[in-house]
Image 1: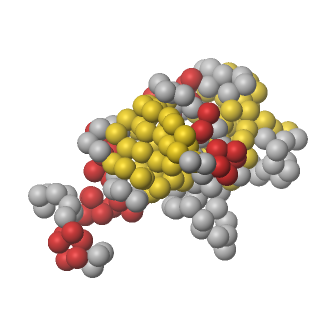
Image 2 (image 1 turned 30 degrees about the vertical axis):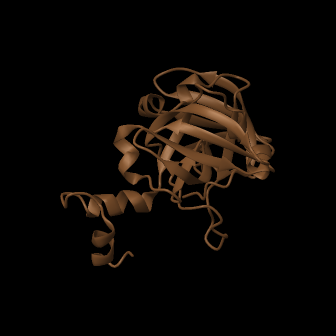
Length: 208
């Protein structure tokens, strides 16, 4: 489990395709990795299978390549990193599993005061889980939804997010990993078959 608060910007060092794709990632972490620990790489929960110094190796199955942007990574690609949440840590973002739901596309980027506004395509299969002022994880970054439409949504990056993650450097047309809020998924599942999710439904379930 993660929070969507990026703790390091890593760099892909080596990619070895095969039945399972091997990737070496360079980081500035202190090197105290443990075999089997989970690290979110651009929002994808991956397992450390080997490490040396500040670098660690992860593996990706074909399913991961199909459902995420990982298949486009090459040596030099910058990725947002977050180590797994420890019991007792502050939960500063929102609950993030590292299970990517869909890949979206950057539609628009523009300055807005000192912040950076970004709009993305909203794949139909995850649109029921998006609500204005709700949470979304984009390439491993926890963000608040500022606008939600039928086929697109928008977020705002404060200067700190621009400086500490790779997201603000994405241009129009870039692909990103999207994970919807897990609470939204369960609520939508619970309300399935009731003619859509409404405020009345939420109140009846004790959620509003």
